[in-house]
Image 1 (cartoon, rainbow, N blue to C red):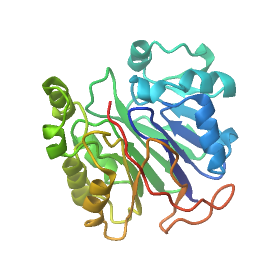
Image 2: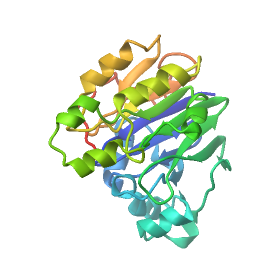
Image 3: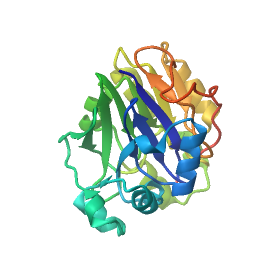
Image 4: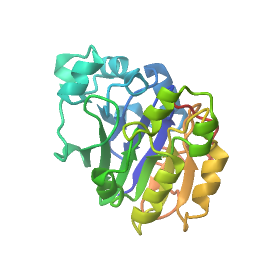
Length: 278
């Protein structure tokens, strides 16, 4: 069985990732409006009706902006920890609120979603892996450091959305105030390009086929810089930069290159554009 993935948006203006098979799908975070989420899924040739759940990683606005309307309009359950729900102040239908715990898989049809802790400046932040038919996809963004949880789960992925937020030199020379620079690089902020590259080169699985670099900073990074940096170490892995302006192509993860699409053939791959941080 193949797994289909797409970045619907990645950046400080909103984060939303679709992972599914031919029967069902989930969203990881819902940081863009319901209408824009619907439009981007439709443009990608995917069916919104296949989405059976939304999983929320943490309470920051760029990860939850669209979840209330999406859940209410489409009657989709939202999986969220009690602490994140309390801190987010989301107004959700009680019947659609589901909780999860780290390392306790949630089964959605033939998808198994596993949450695990991460270091980030939020109340109860988690990242996720989604497994279907022996294929595992990781969503690892908003990470201060590559802790053991991140390393262990990244090493199991056939494909991953991995944060490469900032270039250290650009951050140092940039216009951000000192306190914000400290926050970004302080271990509970974001992964730098070099930190992400180290995780990739040391711990990627031999069967990894796709890496979608995500949550790039608008002011402290360059998509071309990141693309060139990772391309030197790709070893045949498809390196993609996720955009903050549009959806990516749909990628089929099955141990081969992009192949069949669950609803229609995928569009040609797009070049990415600049992204944002906070």
